[in-house]
Length: 187
Image (cartoon, rainbow, N blue to C red; front, side, top):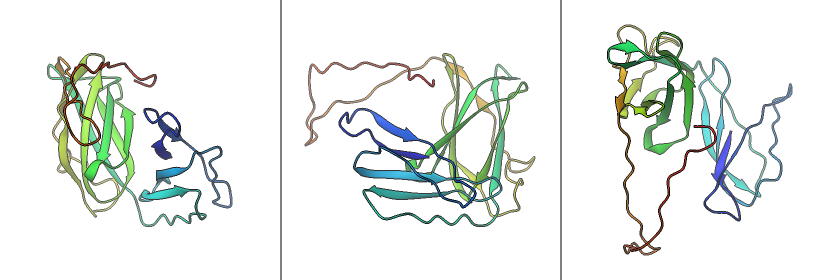
């Protein structure tokens, strides 16, 4: 996956996906100049995230070791929630991944590297608090998220809100700015 600025329209984020061929090669076309985040994942291997400059030199990515798994449950009023969207983020705001819960409210993320992660679940107008610092350690693949290492359930609750501040390029408050929240096409 390639993530970054949208070029001429700075308010639009670019997201492109490619698959490596039998020789391990990948290519993204028509990418505007800029700095991008590149996330490379392979089943059973730990993912790699790095920065890519466009234009820039060809990138060689080495996927090593076994990936780890993280499993959990999404609940509402004590019952598992099917079809909830669960987002996983890395420490420091790194790239995120998403999955959907099964019919019993369970989810699993495979191919993770060791380290702390953050989780959040949503379904319709329900949302869970962010569960931060969820550890995935160097134990054998599949062990994180087992009976002992599973994070607490992500508990959905009613009510959503958005708040923030509008500032100019030097950090001064801007009064009278129009602020609008819209659902993204994939939400």
